[in-house]
Image: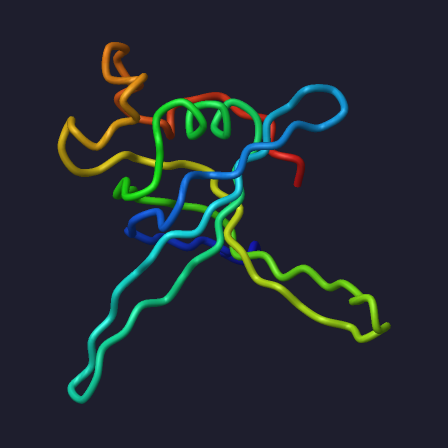
Length: 130
């Protein structure tokens, strides 16, 4: 029996994605999206850290910026590391498998407005390193 590790979020980017490249030139995009919530007595915002790889990261670099509303689907990951004081710590993030841009046409990056973004980013072939 196979287990299921699948998360879905809709939110807005709080700042432009951070793009870096591996030694062999593959793109990695890191960003957080704000997901609002409300209960009977209070409301708030959770910031969901997201990482995308390869072609998906390149599309994020080209078409997604601060304030963009997106749908993210991916796997929940917990990374364990040791800080500079030797204390073991954990961080959580979503490794994006697909992203869909939501909202109006005016939300695209200004330089990308003249180009047509892919209709469904889930259809892009990608080599995710896990």
